[in-house]
Amino acid sequence: MATNEFNISIDLREAETFFAKLASRIQNQVPFRQAVAKLIADYIEKSFAGEQTPSGAPWADLKPYTIRMRQAKGLVPIVKLQATKKGKRSIKVVPTSTGFRVEAMDYMDDHNKGKPNMAARRWMPTEQEMTSGAIAKDIKAIQEAYLTQGLKGFVQGEISRTPDFVRNLLGL
Image (tube, rainbow, N blue to C red; front, side, top):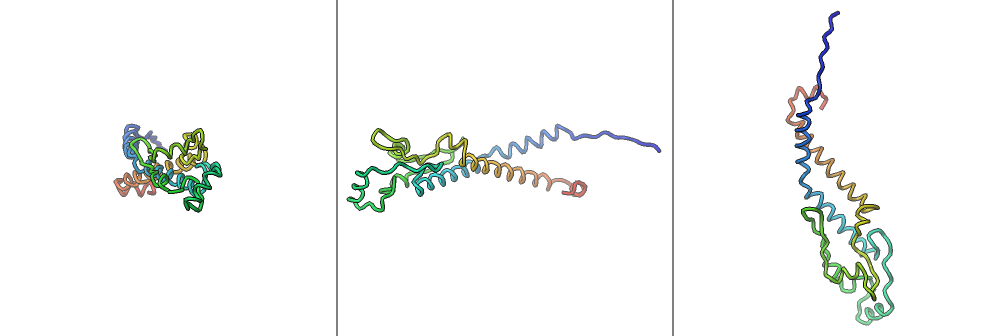
C-alpha cells in the first residue's frame, strides 16, 4: 500500500491579521465605559437609598442638633444627605475617553470626605472599591460581557464571509 503524507498548518500571518482586526473592533470602549458609568450611578443611588457607603457600611448618625433643625424647618422624614435633595440631584456620572468622572456640587465632596465638625457619609466609591469587592466584580462582569459580545459579533461577521463549503466542512 502506497502512502503519501502531507504536512499542513495554519498560516500564522493570517491568524495575526484576524486578531488585529478583532483588537481594532474592541478598541471602541465607549459602550463599556457607558455601562460602567451607569453601574457606578446605580451604586451611588443605592448608597443614598440605604444611607450607606457603596460597599454597604452604614453612614454616621446625624447629630441631635441637625435632627432638631430639620424638624423645625419641616424637613421630614429625616434622611441623611437629602434634606433638600439638591446635592443628590447634582450628582452625575459621566463617561469619558478614559473612564468616567463623578460631578456634584462642591459641598457633596465635603459630605463624602467629612470635615472637622461633619462626619463623612461616603456616597462615592473609593479606588479600593473599584478594584476589589462587589463593584470590581460587577465591572469585571461588564468587561467580560463586552468582550464576549465583541468577539461573538466579529466571529459571526467573519463566518458570514466564509464560503459555504468551508462552513459545512467545519460544521459552522
